[in-house]
Length: 306
Image 1 (cartoon, one colour):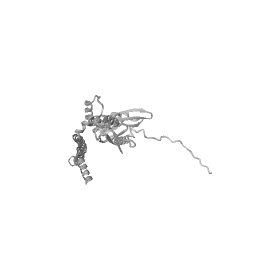
Image 2 (tube, rainbow, N blue to C red; image 1 turned 135 degrees about the vertical axis):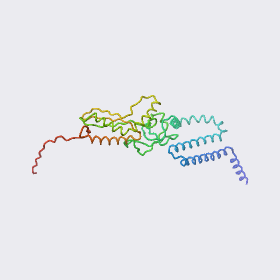
Image 3 (spheres, rainbow, N blue to C red; image 1 turned 180 degrees about the vertical axis):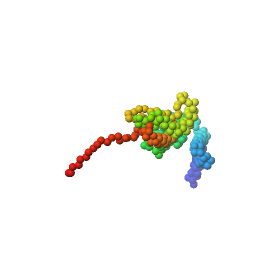
Image 4 (tube, helix red, strand yellow; image 1 turned 90 degrees about the vertical axis):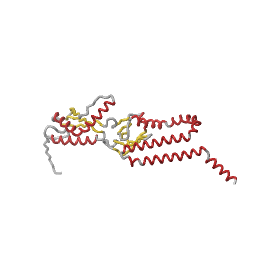
């Protein structure tokens, strides 16, 4: 009987202990905050149909839930923090040294969000990795990889996660931030003896017809870039140049294109140029890739019985 009473008294002492009560309150409060954030984030799709807005709203909900949890913990244990301030200060130095890469990644995350390095949907190259940004986390940026063993700007299927701290260590190449266009070039070899002026005029006409919409859009975007940065104006219309090489004349077609359409436009331009050259090959323009058999030496073959 005495053992039972002592056990009951011990349980009452534990249950009515202020620290135990705060721990129980903390667990219940964090569970409630977690459930509410998941319910709100899960129902965003019912009210917000646009993908980017839905993604950002979910991120904001998770961030607000994190802040509320921190405020809740600081409120519950506010009376304990003053007595632990010295210990926290000593431990904080060691933790900061041990977690310096994590701290740098969090700082990089803030720099990415507020510094305009890139946002989700941008095409970037960081270090040796190139891809489209599909997620920006507190510690890591997630990319859908481009290139590598796949020629052109096509996905490889691999997902890359890069620590956010790289923004302080390596250059960040953004293909789509302030100026979502790229200059590209196509070299076309033409045979000696072709009409050079007519060839240049034909190439320029074909290129302008194909990339005219990109040129118009790029001029508006470039005007904003010139106003924002200290940069000289650039020629955005297609440029046709040629250089003499042994046995042929190399025409270089330089044009501007949307950063996501580079491979497609080069293929379409190649098709149109080939068709135009084929139509003109019997007159003044011919491709240098044509080979003509002009003379075959006479040969005699004598066979003798074995």
